[in-house]
Length: 310
Image 1 (cartoon, rainbow, N blue to C red):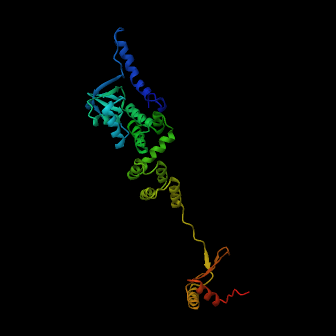
Image 2 (image 1 turned 180 degrees about the vertical axis):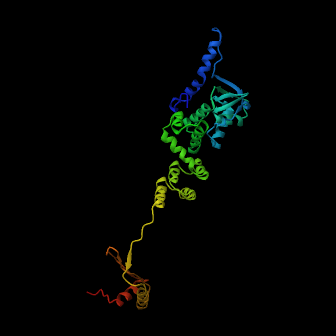
Image 3 (image 1 turned 45 degrees about the vertical axis):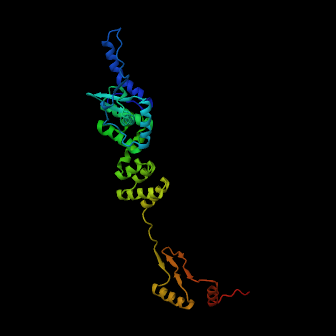
């Protein structure tokens, strides 16, 4: 993409200046030396109904409680920080400041302060993204959708998107991967029911159905990212191969012996035969005899000929 990329670290003021400097210089050449040129990019007031929402707004979720607090403040003090807009026909298209605009509309203000700049579609989206990222107003899904919109609308690579918003390419790539998740899981992340760490773990699961089952389980059980990782890791492991082995007692004889011992002891008896592995190693067996109290234990000990007399 042609043009100079502005990094996030340089701030919105740089973006605004870049968008207006050329026009200011052009205007200065046409104005007589003694006349005062109109301040391009200066603050002015415009009717609220002349400001329209931006199609490039990356943010879709606004906390109702926080917005109402801003409405209350606007009713008393007005909009203290100007909205950033660009002229589109007879309207002013919002670039940054949607919460302030919504609050002004809810507070029934007639006019709002704005700064008008010249900006292409790409620059408008870039500024909207940067403003929200600087304020940390975007949830992880909104951030990813903003990057995806930059890519799709302006045919940018991940590297170019990263330069536009001042992020590492790996950070942008990881963010975009979240959009591979289902709408349900993305909603969980947007609503902070799941962390980005949970989402990244779920991305390693092949089945979409399994992803959603695990997502709901993580929410229901309050699983940490590490706990979810362990569950997913177990799911990905092949079942253990059964060891080749041979019981040392034939099955029919085992049943007969169990019945005879049950009759002899008058209580439940369980026999687990010893086994011989293919490598010749022996696996021990066991004999379990149930008893309910000390008297029955004494009776069983007498039956097997045990005496504690020395």
